[in-house]
Length: 105
Image (tube, rainbow, N blue to C red):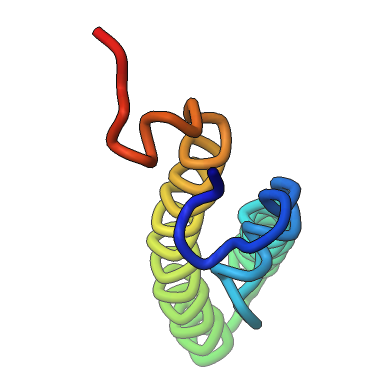
């Protein structure tokens, strides 16, 4: 017997995860965004270190602050998305009898 909401076979892992996440990015996509932003942060840090003008350094430091805020938000989103994806994987891999309440001990 299939879990409630599934008349046919259980969806494959990717289909199920995409269904749950909707338009939100997958964990791998979020990790790629974080990596790109960390690369950008390193470039801005180098630029700030080379800057000879205080006004330019102030602008670059403000940009670094914005990048840090974005990184924090992406890392939080990554943690949530990873949890959701793992929850879907566990649900799919569970014994169908467990989902019916017929778990054997």
